[in-house]
Image (cartoon, rainbow, N blue to C red; front, side, top):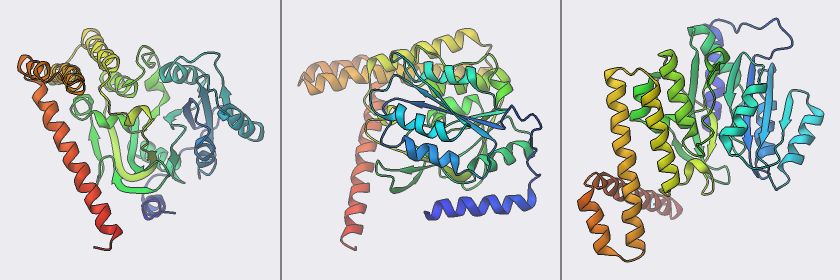
Length: 341
């Protein structure tokens, strides 16, 4: 087990001495936690993901795997696990409808008092479900999460986490809009808070951000995030959340979702201002697509004209070069370690 995972395991033991004990439910038909897993062609990693749920110290869970018409062997892999563990449920589909749709199908079937999510290529640390449940019940919180430990496609540690927290922090809807990466967290949510809330099925990207924003706004809630890294997030080139290409359809979908949110909620001044900033940022990203496309096609005058007509694109230019610089620095450090420097 990696050092980060060991520290997580120790933190569970330490908290057991100070936190209130986990309240166990008496209704045997309803598990404490439902883990929702959407899957599409995840045969390479889904077995490892399921096993990480089975290894949890909290045994009172159900896992609902909602498949999105996979064409590989992942359905057979899940079915084999389900045949030997009654806590695992498999939902299949006849056509591909996107992650939002299949997650909604799973939520309709969920029986747990708490709901959390696990992607089919990620892994839970042992003790994670029990730790989050203890935290939620001890502090009377409705939404809790921990930091993400980022690994590469092969499962090796990258040395990075999503937030790099040293102590717990709370985030509200405004915080989420200011830092959209918070939507990559995989929170544990009281099922009652999700009543009447479902994923926006028109979104195939940014859907986690959208439902979390609506959840926080509806209940005027905060998400409590702890520094323990109980979720191992696999960053790979083909995954939706790590695809950095600025896709027009994706950005337009996010713009539409932002507009629907602004129109359907009574917003505080700070939340309204944050939504307006997000609108400008998404519009700038959409124009940045035009710039990069023109550059690829060597239409440099057109690219310059796009920048002049839409000055907000300059922020995208700065972000682009900052990312390139960070990548070069990271590669240099890895090269230095390779040669023992």
